[in-house]
Structures are given as C-alpha cells and as structure tokens.
Image 1 (cartoon, rainbow, N blue to C red):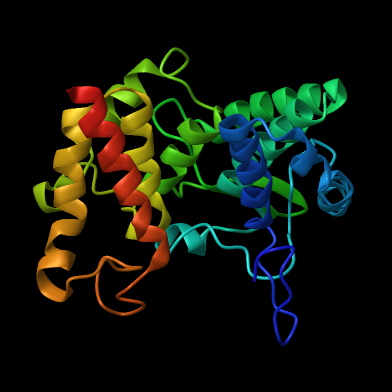
Image 2 (cartoon, rainbow, N blue to C red):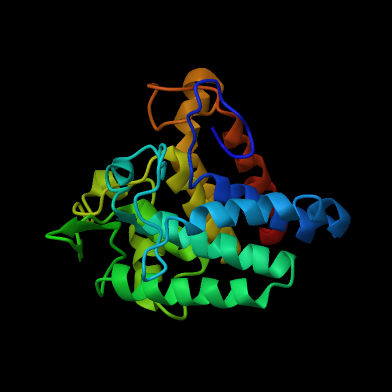
Length: 260
C-alpha cells in the first residue's frame, strides 16, 4: 500500500509514500549514486504535485485520502483533520527532494512548513498530534502521543537546541519502562512499529549508545525469548516475524562499533 506499488483493490497509505523519498536520499548519501536517483525525479515530483492538492492555506496537509497511517497506537486515532506527524514527515520529504535535485524553492517551503508546525503543534511541553475543524475553523486538540514527539525530532521539526527540555524528558523519562513506572500517563505510548524504532534511531543519532543497547533489550528481548522472532506490535496480535525489525541489527552494529 506504499507508492509506487499497486495493491489489489486500490487501497493506499498516502503519508507512507514520503518514506520512499527519504529512502532515496539515504541511498544517495550511502552510495553517491546520483544517476540512479535521477531516474526517479519525475516520479518524485509527480508525488509532490499530488500532495500539494491537499495543502491548506497555511501549507499544512489536511484531509488526506486513503488510510493515513502514523503507527500502530493511539496516534492513529488522531490522523484528521490536520495530522502533525504526517506534516512533519512532509517537511522532511520536501527538504529531501530539495537536496537531491538542488531545488531551493522546495527547501524554503520545507523550512516554512517546519516553522508552521512548531507554532501550531507545540503546546509549551509536548507536540500535539492534530487539529480538527470546529464551526469551520481549525482548533488544536489535547491529543498528545509519544510517537508524535519522535516524529518531530526525527524530521528536524524539533532539535535538542530548539527544545532541550523536551529532549531531556524524552531521553531520560521515557523508554521501555515508562508506562510501567506510571510516568506521563497523559501521553499515549508508542508501539513497536514505528514509534519505538524512531526512538531508538534518535538515541543512535545522538550518541546514546549504551542506552540504545539497553532499550533494545527492553523493547524486544521478550519477543526473541518467546518466539525467536521480532514482532510488528508489542504483543502477538499481528505479524510475529516482521521484516522491518531487522533494522535492529543495524542499530546494534552501530552502537557496538561506536561504544568500543
């Protein structure tokens, strides 16, 4: 259900297509293969043209069609009317295309969108997940999820420099034991896919390697001990052998190399 794939029945996940763009950028950075990336230029710009139809007057995506998927958690109850995790991801995708194809206009658009999301989503403590229409106007909700915070930092909407207290809270008071310990019960917890992975990636990016290795155990060791595999959810309600979970091997490799 992710562009550019076709699915029987025509279902699709609109915001997940943005990961396709980020993967192209990652590929270019790892390989330097500009020729391969250039083969996708037309397709990428057609995708952005499609998204542009759903921008409101503030440049925020709203009312995306299809199945708007943020992750397997309460975060997916807050996807309309304006979903901030999706808009955070959109800003990152716009920036990626701008960098890949030297498009300064898209770079400026991405930065403007990040500023708008900061102003509209952040409540002084955490980023809120969405805005909804009431009496014809968009109003902020009080919906706040752990995963929304990770989208913010992963996409560059938030940084440690801009939001040092939020980063301190997330890095020291959240994690595998947060719900069990009763911290911040008003913040809906992440699930394995994709919130916990985003958290682990952020710990890796910021050099918290020992913490990263311990949290991988906290999030996933019980799965390996029970089934010898890693799961799509925190429990066994879906795939208990999920391909994306192999990303943990990359994180473990990076952490072991860096801490040594």
